[in-house]
Length: 588
Image (cartoon, rainbow, N blue to C red; front, side, top):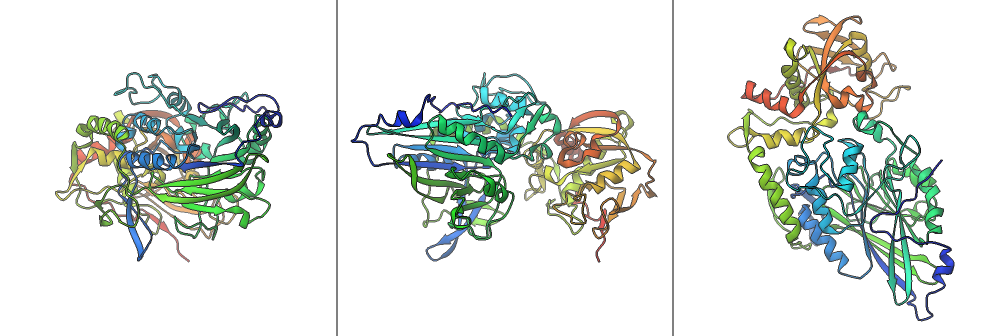
């Protein structure tokens, strides 16, 4: 295996034997150097406060605290940096992708520009960084206006300068073994003649190809996270690294509160990674699950003395990690961490009115970051505020007992309506995946629905694809909603379907025999039937592990999914939430 230990933008190149280099430190060197490591994750382009209140312990009981927003996050980062001269800032992935309209409409360029103002060091690439494909990811890193998507880059910044921090993706390789982006980075801290070097390894979760459009990662492979990290640790040591930080877009969850330091109930995909990871690693900054935790993993397994952290989602929390490094032994002698609430501004939303809490510090909006946000928001307003139609009630993505949802069914109907005419593909059936629903659809007091809300529901910019599948292929695809190969069903991804199609499933049956009773337009759907099916380009290329949906013939590509949803509202208003009764789950 060829490993490329590339050095990021904030790094320094150190050659030769690290022990000989460290011996140059004068006898008057301080006994230790204190370093602040600041972490966040799963920002998802939330430039504005996301309207989320964190419920956390206060002096007199639980307190709801308004949190998040890039301008406030920038101020919180600056406040932590100001406590001492030695600091580094890292993001554990999904900085962009599945973003609100103000960022996504402009291909997440505003988020990169806002993070540039924060002066962070590294971002470990997550699965959502590949939403628009790896070439567009490289454009976000390096800048430029080359078009890789259906949307136009550089609408405001001409040209777009790219990220002024390093994207790291150690286990994401081209077929020839070259890393897509740098694998590692170094940062150097000097005090009184003594120097400490911190090494960073950035990892993308191995399961990324199953979570993004396959075309977006074509030609890449995602290697095992632990094998990759363990191979890079001695290379970083040889380059002078005294402290090793793994920044990984994979995570878990605990039963502890978001501000509590505890490993209680730690579970999830991060656990087997920690158990195999080289104990020379000092800190693991994680993400992906949108959970908040601080865990001294050495209390779980003394042989693996990692500090494990995650800062929730959307910039609502920031992890403050304090490391003390002995300048003689070149080892971390103490490490602590806490999650800090990024309290922003009062808001009124689904949680009612949430005022600023005096129990926690309230951060002022950073002026430079706010200026970036205001510029892009102003450019987005005319499109975002455009009325598209009316709804009689909120249409929500909460799953019914069958695991379909009203919102999923609505979008499936919209896709069908946009493509059922022969000249538009002749669709008879539509599928919608639950992971593509990013927000509920809630009309205002007058029942109006605006384009910005539609965009919030479907921010990925997928195109609609119509193709012919047989009845047998449709059944096989529906079987893929459930884990195959055993009788244990894990994390089913039930597709919402368009009207005039129905079926039932029975999880007590063995794999391959769970789907039955398929009916299309009132008639049984036979195995040899030829059916025109519409779906997103994400599902068309096998996304969410629906490999059968990548099959089919006579493929025809149509409009963007959000444009189809807008056309549906214009044609059908006022729209009522469809019933979530098209699928029957057999209960025993």
